[in-house]
Length: 315
Image 1 (tube, rainbow, N blue to C red):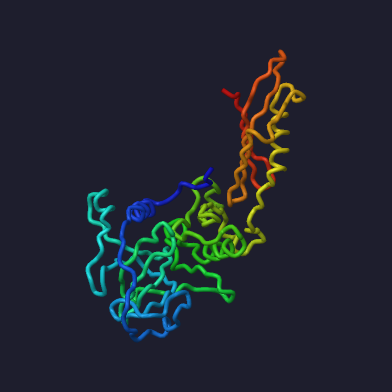
Image 2 (tube, rainbow, N blue to C red):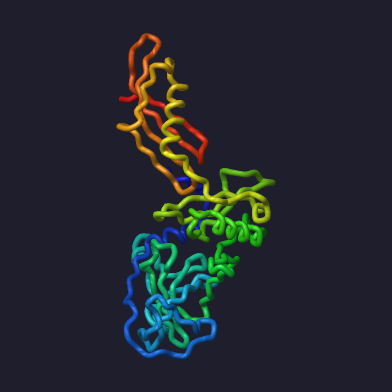
């Protein structure tokens, strides 16, 4: 099960198509001499960076972003990189770009140019190229070192642009409070088309969960300052899920006392980072005529609550 909301604008969809078709692969940093640095980029990362790199630059390792869509070049002051696969599939020339929703790592910096690769989303980690230093901005962090998302990190449309401060504040609360939300995909911030009303809209953001499993978190714009908790919902324990699903089987059976629920052989227990869990099993039960049949059962939990039960006769 993947818990998602399908409401995205056409622009978001096209950006996604081009991003997925990206196949750029360039050379990593090599040897060279250091160059002068702007003050805000002066600190050198301790994670394997700090030496020389190509074009007489310095390998900084800084985590950065851009303020607007920016074409990647094959060298400082070089040619735009063609997104070959997107161009071939869409029958129109597309150039490799990075946008404000992507987290970038600066791998090499000269006095006027920086080479970057995409850090997040991880699916675009192969994308790299050169761009002007002037197009970069530093990622903001709070006093504890956690990323602080700002308005420039998101796409804004007619449904969201009037509420930028509230929505950004709510997203930062989600990232701080939900332990399963390791980071967010800023490009997914949208108004939900399946929840809320015209007077009380609901929005959602996609979190990157443990084991690279995405999930959505829904919220209202007033939740930035409300008492609502965004803490991760605890998945029901396997044993408790088995007991609850067995009781659901008895409730569904014509003769509950004849239910023989499988607690081992046919049991599959799945958990999701949004707090939902699914237990699949089977049971036998007799009908009104005393004839025994076998059935499959699926139980869906939201936290500790059983929210859906599906029973089918086994084939």
